[in-house]
View 1 (cartoon, rainbow, N blue to C red):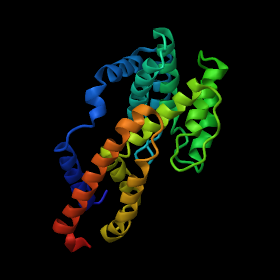
View 2 (view 1 turned 135 degrees about the vertical axis):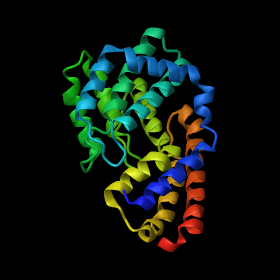
View 3 (view 1 turned 180 degrees about the vertical axis):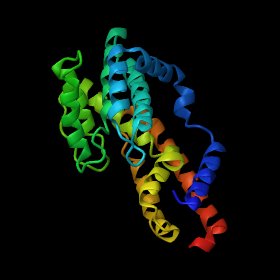
View 4 (view 1 turned 180 degrees about the horizontal axis):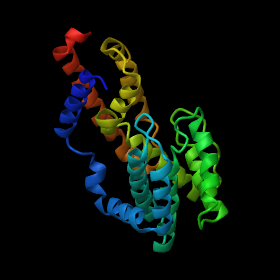
Length: 252
């Protein structure tokens, strides 16, 4: 990464640190803790996480760290929505494993074109070696295929399968908030290293893309909390833009 971008990354992280965390984590601490406990202790997820640690390359900020954040939040959303739907404790725990498998595997083919479709296919092959039922593997695969924004979704017949898909999508799009400016953006820049003037030329389009994502959240929990994630990201983006124009104008 060019030194100028390293400096801007630090400024972005300072800006983010001065903002409050999303309300989702304050309002749903129990769901978040339940999700993290499952991820750390379920044998299926322990095995799958180790597999990904060995096999998932970091690509434009979509490596293992990203996958774990998505997995934890997808599990928390599933916990909230499942309780609202009247899931039993046993069903809630089992569906937690399914949504977290989807979270861990959703970017397994991130480097490829049509990564959602190819990732779904690869996830199906991987999970054949795990103690999951065929319909559970199908729910994981369909959720992965449906996790991209602004793409046509494949149909899912069951309400339980739809919820897995919605939880994965919303948790993945939570990352378009503060995470975009504290991590993802700089991982992308470290690959492409554009001149600052070209980076700034694309800035309005990138901000507009973030604005558009606010209306795409799918679960009731995502619709309630997702827009705030995006608004926090937009706030960081606007403040960072002002910093660039005020303090780094000599590079433009």
